[in-house]
Length: 454
Image (cartoon, rainbow, N blue to C red; front, top):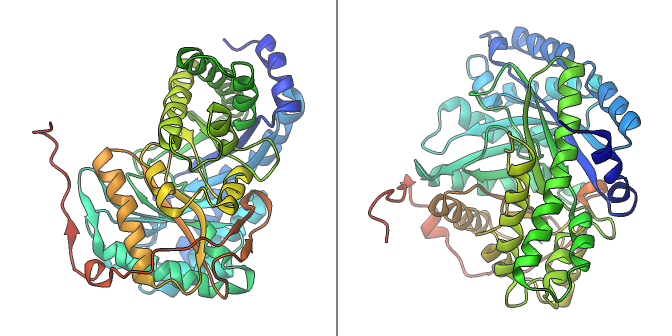
């Protein structure tokens, strides 16, 4: 049982250390909306979302007031639209019409993002899935709330290099389509390996086909809380350091468990998972980079960074699983450059490079996240970076993702402004040696062997 003592114990964290429930995400299955008539499909989608989510924002606001816990975002995730729209959509433009419907439904119920404009193509692409992927640049350009994702690889199936190559082109096209806003569309597009079915965090949220008709997932974040706790054990040994992170993660996750339970009961929708992810914001004191520096690094990117991040990620998960029976999603530490002031400062200082970030993704919660690169970067190079990150996920049996933003008209040293939680980012250099002949090969990189490991 969660008691009011635990709630009051977190007041200091909320008031002084940027603790928040980052999102209540309502997952809605659209499988029962499938129809071969596009107009009828759009009607069913709009009606299902607006009926199921009509009280989501109101209930979130009630919980905020009653418990004094900030709930930053109320969001929706849906069944991957490549599945839902396959029977009705013959062209990319048909899928764009569904994107408009999703956007309109999200606006009606008052959420800030709706995820699930997605395709799962780790082994191959159907014509419908390819049409959805090709529709992404226009869909993100003509909507405000849509988030899109493509899963191109998994540990069991390998990496679909045809999809990787296509995604490199789509990222570049999305950047062009939204170039008037510093290529903002790319901030709402993520390419995955081993994408989880129950992720509440955008831009990668969708409701997997194994999930219920509707489910409440909650994402909690507290980098500032962890940093403050670590200040009290400065100079202590690793055992005390690890124990402090675990205990802090436990307390933070209990807040998420409380909110998830309340939201589930008041909405009459089953509770799914709590995702404890140290997701930073541009706010001062809400930085994963600052945690790593508190552990003992002069700057993020210095030797020891990957080890420190591995330690942090593991202890966060160990504390989280003790606090809730249903911890899921991504759960761990995010390292998005544009959303973390400490990461931005490290790039400016020259300690953090794209190559070091790639090494860090071997042990972090997701991957190369919210990284601005020169707008002139070729699509083949973007595809190569995606392939590298997918390989890390495939071989290490973990979720990895890429959210690159080639900012059209800007080059290394320029600044890209995205606004709100998305923050701002310095444009980082990219290795200019080519990989076009590699990514142009057709087919799939085979899955790694699952036995005979040494």
